[in-house]
Image (tube, rainbow, N blue to C red; front, side, top):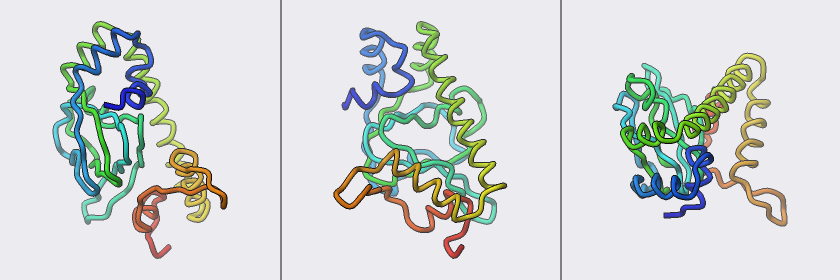
Length: 191
């Protein structure tokens, strides 16, 4: 287990060393290949995941089969936590974009940690607030920004999160297809 990546998650930020070890011991490591489905829209939300390595896309399908890509997540980021606090089924599908190792924590184990360490809840709430803020920004971009502007903003975000410096500039190995990039900005590939 790459404890350094897992420890960078908001779930661990408020824990002392003993608390971190206790949560790590409750987590299950799971390896996924590209295109593997981690969870589907409609599944029960029984666990959260922390990405140890790789990338995961989170999307929502429309009734006519089109997909809206909600987020691309990487190492240290958490997914699936919303369904642990809301009894409704999952409202998105998480798919592996690049070979990934994820660490899962069951709802029961998370609740135990939250009961023993209320500060963990504050860090999770801060993480959810950041995600909500990003969602609000994306919604405003859909209304006020044109497609080239939305693409530019998302490429800059991907570069900041996943880019690496090369002699020629910044290389962004995001693992997304052109269609997925279009979905990320609320456009069609042809646009």
